[in-house]
Amino acid sequence: MSTDGATTAFDRETRLRFMRIDDETRTLLREFWKTLEPALKGIIDGFYEHVTREPTLARLLGNEIPRMKAAQAKQASMRSA
Image (cartoon, rainbow, N blue to C red; front, side, top):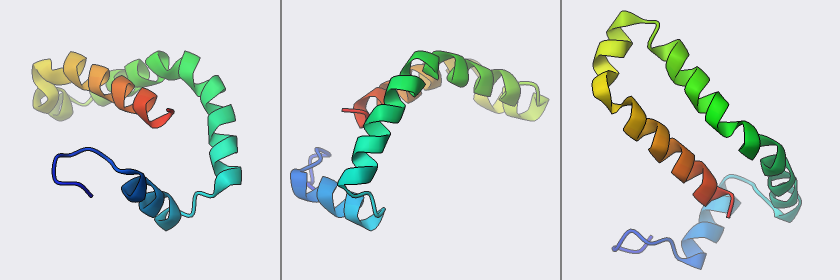
């Protein structure tokens, strides 16, 4: 992986090969994204609603939930590219 945090084509291909994601799987994932993307906000919201029902976890997450939700949504959309 490059030292500046950017992912090179080599890094990406190496990771995909390690995860055994071939061209067919990539196509299936792109198709699945069309279903997942519209539901993503609700999925993330539901996850944090569930997690924060546990008082210890709610305290641990504190005021970071909006930031974490945004980061997860951003990461998911970047992975779909």
